[in-house]
Image 1 (tube, rainbow, N blue to C red):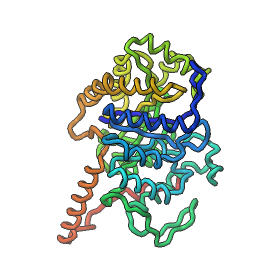
Image 2 (cartoon, rainbow, N blue to C red):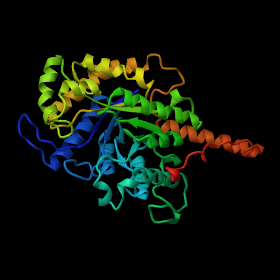
Image 3 (cartoon, one colour):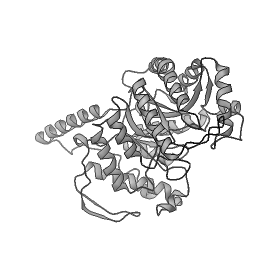
Image 4 (tube, rainbow, N blue to C red):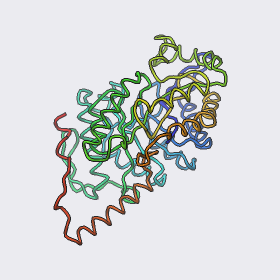
Length: 389
């Protein structure tokens, strides 16, 4: 099972010192955080995408390409790639380039974002958000899977004889997650393509997460990609840990109370009771997150938000060490307990997907030579299209 961290890249004043980093310092701190996560042995670093203050991660591929050169083992990903307001041609090109640069040590998560004004800034209508997500991703898939694309849709200039470059590494597109907090159509989209589904449930009770993941699993099986329990699932979460639980509570409280996203609202205790936020000892974090599989089944990726709300860089690096040294080893062991042998422990790597593609090509060639292709092929592809959503 994979464990890692994600950043939303907020620039927030430290309420204990009154210090606010500028954009440059925040970007450099994020680079340091990602490299430290790699050195600590975490599996994944992911960045969001935002185009408005107080966030600075406006160019995920630039950030991740730099990190590809500076890290050794960690998978580089996005916690949001804005499928609705980015040109799908640019998404196809930029992430194929990142795939080549990183030698396949990457994946990405498509999302609609949560900032309404971004839509008109990029010439789109938020009321078309779901339709944009569906049509744009369908085009991204075509651009990755076909050398020459002729295409016409509702939201973009038609393409005639267009080739997206560079071509995906080894002819295999990057692995894609679809991220959604509350939209069933996105869970359906992930299931339709047999992609991963990531539920970033940092603000929601576990019952909501269970419902969304359950829908995705059911539809994944419906579309013939495997059993429901074999679907690829990721979850978001957040924690703050110290050896002594009360020390963690005392240290984190001013950050919680003043955080732009949930400060001045419910108490930290009430919020933690209703969401996955866990503030306490490493064992409390382990107990909370080991229980997630009781609600969503065996899953493949768990990411944590730990660098937000004005927390100083030194503290964030300490949290990474606590996560890597004290929490992840136990969660990895507990997460795989009882996992059926045919249920994946991790999302598919590029190496695994490239090998599967080669095997499928060899099988298809053998079938063609035997004259058996097409005689009994049944597909679910006409059952769901974005046009009706």
